[in-house]
Length: 228
Image 1 (cartoon, rainbow, N blue to C red):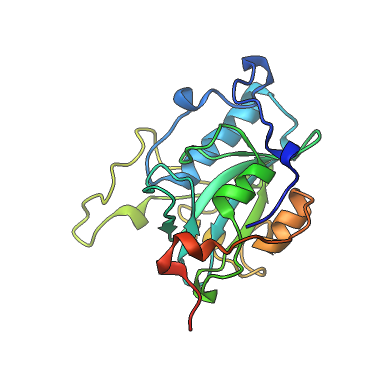
Image 2: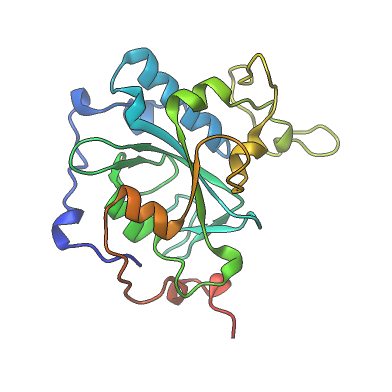
């Protein structure tokens, strides 16, 4: 995993309400398995309530070409085992002394410093199979609000039944599209919006760390262990 100085982990989990750019975790609009819409709603809140300059806020999609990415410290996880998602989405705030991550599905603080999140939730791609290596698409909030659309068809079975109950509000659409979720999940740089990074590049750019590693992430996850 990425190694940061001890002082990087001092994060006040009791952030004052006036310092938050989103509601508290329990007051956020949230629907399980609809990560992209949860983050869209967070971006919308920041824009509507003007809690931060919108150019400091980003939607971050985490996936890869195989749509198999491990994340630790997730509510759906068990102990120190990772959850393998096809993709996941978090909010990133880049301002002040360090970047912050807002992950509604994490057991870590909300928000959480990116350095802490990188060390404990993302960890490192070193020591795990290449098929599970993470890539991240970072989309400016204004672009995300303007362009993202989902008719939620990806959450329906062939018979039209819901795999997971949808949000209560109408689907998010634009004048140009009713469904372009795959363009955001895609990690092809020429597709969609924003910029695509490897995990190492992302942490270097936004957490400003050295990428020295300790024991490999695979020690706690046989499913993503290095191939022999």
